Length: 68
Figure 1 (cartoon, rainbow, N blue to C red):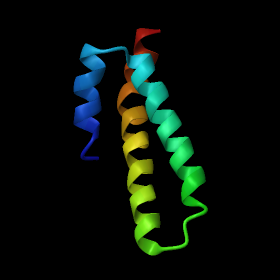
Figure 2 (spheres, rainbow, N blue to C red; figure 1 turned 30 degrees about the vertical axis):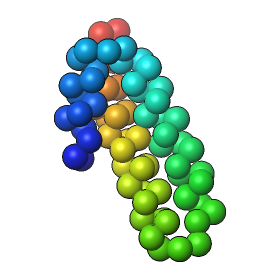
Figure 3 (cartoon, helix red, strand yellow; figure 1 turned 90 degrees about the vertical axis):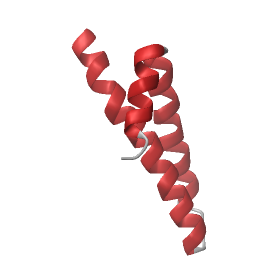
Figure 4 (tube, rainbow, N blue to C red; figure 1 turned 90 degrees about the horizontal axis):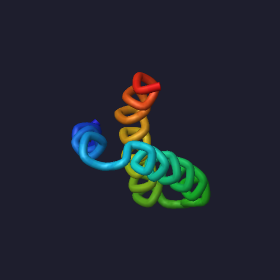
């Protein structure tokens, strides 16, 4: 939620498709990697990174859909 305005700002100035692709990749990779973490602290860090990827997608995707 904290990173959503940042991705909104970046989406207005840079390629939305690249930002969304980065976010989905980050979301996917950290979800997969987080399943192999054995400590709570590591799991919390990876879940935070999942949230960053999800924030980029949920902010940028509606604007791409409306452009189409």
